[in-house]
Image (tube, helix red, strand yellow):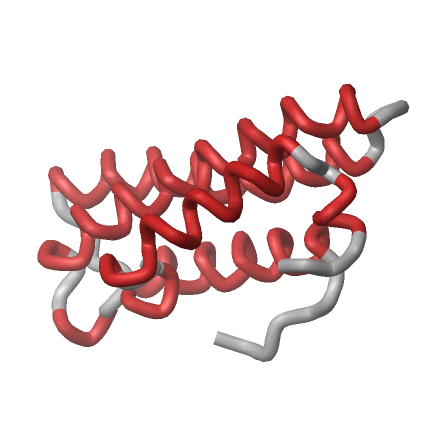
Length: 125
């Protein structure tokens, strides 16, 4: 993966862009096609909801959209984990999947930040 840009909207755009590049390389089978379709929906929705949240009129408008974006991140990770075994060793999605060791702490911090949208604009992520 490329170096992280500073802004959350740009980072979620980069995530979706790199995810779509990875998806293009995946083998197409009956099983992977449906998982890839769902991954496309969830993975690109992260950035769309982040963009919409950033355009909110107030922090109260922003928080729900960022919360939805976080849920889409979790859904994307789920589909990536399912595809890991089915996409072949040359298409390993590990760059997109958080390691299980730190996942709980990172998710907790992300949930807390979704409840406090100001932390997103301060460049915490």
